[in-house]
Image: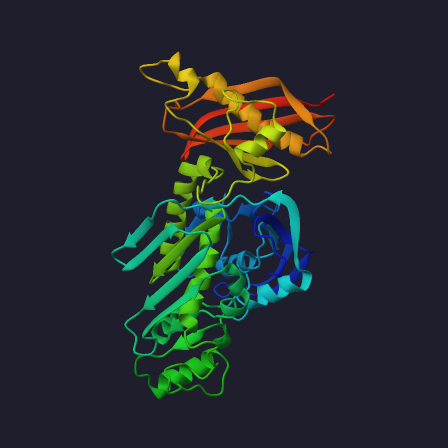
Length: 468
C-alpha cells in the first residue's frame, strides 16, 4: 500500500494485467487477468474458457471443497486454490476486481502471494470515489473444532489484525506464531511466505496423482521422520531432480526459508485469503490457533452471519464524551436561530461535507415532559424530527458560501419511530446528504440512535435561504 493510501475509500486495480502458471493439483496451465471493476463489485472470478463465461463471487457460502486449498463453485462452475490470489488482493487494498481465468485452478507460482502482489504493484491500485463501509465486531466471535483442535476468535478492534499459532507436534516446526498488526505490513512480511507440506503428505499426494502441477519449489517440504535413500530417489525422480537430500534443519534441500517462522506466516496468509470470502471488510483482531482452510471458511461463515445480523449497526456513530466537540452549544446558536427551550442540539461531534452527528442529552427537566406523558415521560416524535432538522440545518448551512442562512424543511418521508426516548438517554442525531446540494435544495437521510439502537429515521428535504 502507498503512503497516501486511504483505507476508508474503495480501490480497484490500476489497469488490466495478466499472469500465467500451472495449477498445483490439476496440472493445467492457465492465464489469469486482473481487471478493474466498479465500486461495490467486490472480488469475482470469471471462467472465460467456459460457455457463457460464468462469474463466481468470492463468497464463503460458495465454498464446496477445502481438502487441498479453497474451491468456490456456483451452478457447476468451479475455481480452485483461490486463497493466495485473494490474500494478495486484500493485502494490496483492492476491494473491486474481476479475475478472469481460462482454467479450473489459479496458478500456484511459488506457493506464496508474492508473484501476484508484484504483478499488482506494476499497475498500482486506483482509489475510487466511493466510501468503504467497514464492519466492526462488537463482541467476541468464537469458533472451535474439537476434532481438528482448532480455536479461532474475532475480537473488537480499531484495525484488522491477525495472529496465527501452529503446533503440529513436529520436532522440525516446533511451536510457531506470526502476527500482522496492520495490513500495510502484508506485502513485505507475509506475501513472500510459501505453503508447506510434510514429506509423508507429499508421498500420499504423489501416490494418488493429486499434485499434477507440483514442483519441488512450490512448497516448503518438512521432513520430521526418518527417510530412506530409496524414498529420496523416488522423490527426486518424481520432481525431475538428479538428487535430493534432507538438510540438518529437517527441510528438503530445494530451498531456503525466507523467514524462520515462514510456515506460521503462510498460515496467516491463508487466513487473510480465506477470510476475504466473508465479503465484507471487517475491523477485528483475529487469533487463529492451528488454522486450516476448512476451519477458516467455517469461521468466515460465522463472521458473515454476525455481520448480516448486525449490519444495520455499521453506520452507528460513536460518541466519546472526553473528546472536545466540533460545535459547542454557543457556536450552534451562532449558526441556528433557535433558542431555549427549542434548541434541541447540545453539540456537534462529527462534521464532514456529507455527514453530521449531533448530540442531545435528554433530561427529566425538559419542558415538554410536563405535558407529554408526565408520569411516564417519552420524548415526542415530532421533536425527534425537529432535532434532526436542526442538525441537518447546520450541515446544510456549513456547506454554503459565507453569510447567514436559515433552513426551511420542505418534506419529510419514510418517517419511522422504533424505540422511545426517555430521560437519561443520550441521543445521537445523524444526518447525511443523499444528493449534492443544488440551488439550495438539500436531500438528507436522518437517523436517531441511543447507544447502538436505532430509535427513529426519516428522509428529509430542506431549502437553504440566505437571510435578508
